Image 1 (spheres, rainbow, N blue to C red):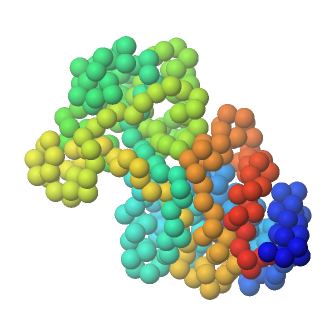
Image 2: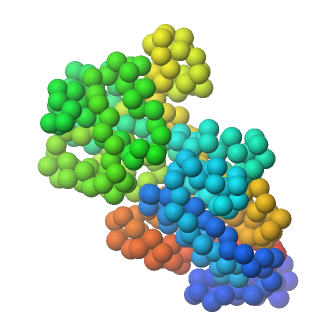
Length: 321
């Protein structure tokens, strides 16, 4: 690389970090890039990291609240343009429907891999011997009970729109539990914080990467290993009459996806998004800036960008240099 090019690239990174706009090229369209905004912190922060980097390139952007399932149909229609966190365990079917129809494009997987399943604090292994094996749950079901579920145990799930098929899992594995949905990620982890402080029984939905594993010692429940046949063929698995008699995928993908017209309309921005690649620790940190440090999601994104100048430099597309 020539001295001039090195200087230009360095100035670009400096401009991104300190907040000055980058005018290396003229945006192909003045229409705003509409970025999906879901109801958990890592997605909110990563969406705003993408937003702030796109704005430094000169693009107009808009963060749009979106349902975690309905967002894909909206993106297929062009009502949304970009999603930075597509989780295999929760969103695969909705996402792939639009990709296969040619209405969305898969912009590649992050280095981070995912897991989404039942999770408990480590102290539960004294209260419920046999964990993390799922077969231990029924013997301890009453210990997990709350007044609204007694004598059945309570499984505290995420919001209803985080479709996880937990009722089907409970039925297929004959678990003596009832699903209770939290209204939001904040409510879900608010209950965890309260239970953890008192060492009270709790089993709840959790995922990785996330900030929770760094703050609270705990483990995922180990259900029968996931295979595609588990959700397609009742004869597969421990229950020959039911599907969903298994756990969620381990090492699942975390992808980026966009409206199929994105590349043609915002070509340089498209290259930026393709280049962005979050590791698990990066996402843990992004979520912790909001949920542990207490920053707003916008401020957390700004702080995250300031802490990762080398990654930002590597992601910047040639069209912006």
